[in-house]
Every structure is written in C-alpha cells, then in structure tokens.
Length: 379
Image (tube, rainbow, N blue to C red; front, side):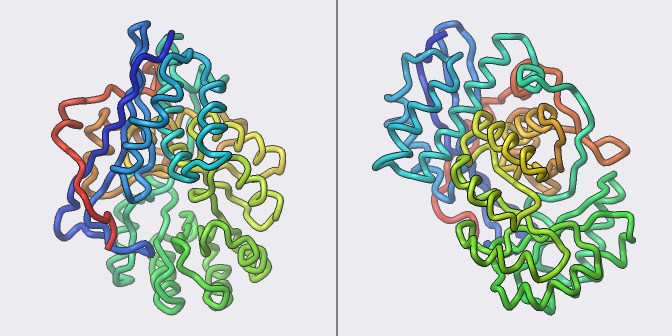
C-alpha cells in the first residue's frame, strides 16, 4: 500500500480550574497533542501521536509540509525505509533536530497502526510479543507539589484503585521533597513502590541532600534529576546513594540512548514513543537496554494513542518494566480520543488490547471539537 496523504492535527484543552497540578516544569494550564493521520491507497488508515514539544502548531506544520512531501508515495509497509528517509533528510543533517524526531515519531506510530491493521493483528503480536500483564504505576500530571497530607491522601486514592506503585513530583526543594515522600511512605506502607520525578529540577547539591532520605524511604527510582544531556551530573549523582536513577523521556533516537546507557549511571531507561522515533526506534532502544541488563520503562504522553502503543510495545519486550498510568482527574485526551486505552486489573497491571492495530478507534468528531489553543501549556 502506498501512502497517499499525511495530515497532522494539533489539539488542545484547558485544564479545569482547581485541577492545575504544579510540578517542576510549571503549573499545568492546558494540555496539547499532535495527532497524525496517514491514508493509503489500500483503504487502510493509521493514526499516531507526535509529542507537542510545547509548540504543537510548529510540529504539525513540519509534518504537513516537509515530512509529508518526503514520504508520500512510499510503501506504507516499509516502515524502516520511511524512518530512514526522514532521519537522513531531516534529522541527520541541517534538519530541525528534536522537532523532526517528534514529528517522525507520530508518523511511525501511524504506519505501525496500518501494518497491524492490514495483518488483522494487535500491534504486540505483529512485533512478536504475547498478551501478558504489564505492571503499572500511577503517574501522568498528578501527585505534584502540594501539602504532604494532601499528597498522601491522593496517593492512597490510587492505591485503593489497584495501583501498587505511585510516582511523586519532586524538584521543588530538598526539605519539602523529603517531607512529601516521607508522608506518602507513612501513608501507603512498605509494600507500595514509590518513585520520584524531579523534572530536571535538581542540582548536584540537591541530590546530595535528598539521597540519604530517599535511600531510607526505599524510593524505587529518582527520575530526571538533571537535563537530558547533562551526562556528567548523572554520573556524579549515581555515586551519591543506593536509589537508582531513571531518564530517557527527553532523549531522542538510539544515538542519544547509546551515551545514556554506556555511561552506566541510569538503571531505568524511559523513551517516549511519541518523542524518540516511534515504535521502530523504541524497539531498537529496548534491545539495547536488554543487552545491558537495564529496565525498559517508557514514558507516556498525552493521548490514548501513545498509551495504547506503549502497552503494545511493552508486551513485545522480553523483560518489560513499568507502564506509566495517567491518573489525572481530567484528561479527555486519555478517555475520549480513542476510548479509554487500558484497564487496571486487581494486581495493578494492564494488558494490550486485542483490537487490530494500536487498539484505539479514533473519534474524529472529538478531535474537531478540540482545536489548537495557542500559548504555553505550563506557566
């Protein structure tokens, strides 16, 4: 089947007042996404999600113009060939770098959706996997910078729903971060996994101050204490305690993960399928993590498309890590773009859909009702 059309659709919604979670990257005021629709001459249509990069209109424009012109007419089944053409023409030389990687990611997800639909199989099966339970943690835009007692109550609510792990947002200041983590540990007990995410907000001195407490609290990982390319700080921080480091949602393509993995500072590797190069590149990165005996734990993005694709990929990985469940109180991108993309079982696990493709049925009326809202999504 040949690719006949590619259309990017940037969508947005305002976060309701009173639900504006504050975390290291700011206070959430709206949520954005860029959906990618690929049409073929065989009558099969695929949908993907490109990360918005905090500038969804620009990502969509790049897809609709440059990238579409590069690949329309190519074989939709030749996913690796399409990936290589975009990489060679737009990422490797004189291109738009990370914006192109995000745009390519959305295109790649849509092409895998087409391939699996054409085969009549769910994506995980096409990738060589099997349906199996994938452990999940309560994450997304939640559990932010709030009073310790409020945070503990919120965490207990997710445990009551079946989650056996929660992720707290830190990166505020060492004193308050430790107080919040301590309150949650006291509230949920020792059997629940607590993870923390600094959203690149720590300095080395901050890590030096919080690490003894995180070790005592048996924190499962400290995620993104520093910006993605600050490799030296990751190496220094890894020697400051026993709490392992996690990173990867802001690393792009296997080439950046190569350095991240070989530095041996990070134990939990977290590519985002909508950022790092789609399913194609994420499976390559999963193979790299397996060779180094590291844990593969993808970061999830805004809509059910990314979430469903991520579960499929985890089901196709030899030793999958966590799926990041989005527990935000209000996220129509999770619940309404393609229907709720996963269900949590009694053991705190999720499983891939048996629907052919990524496993979501896109509601284009919903998409049309949520046009792009200009401006920053965090302030």
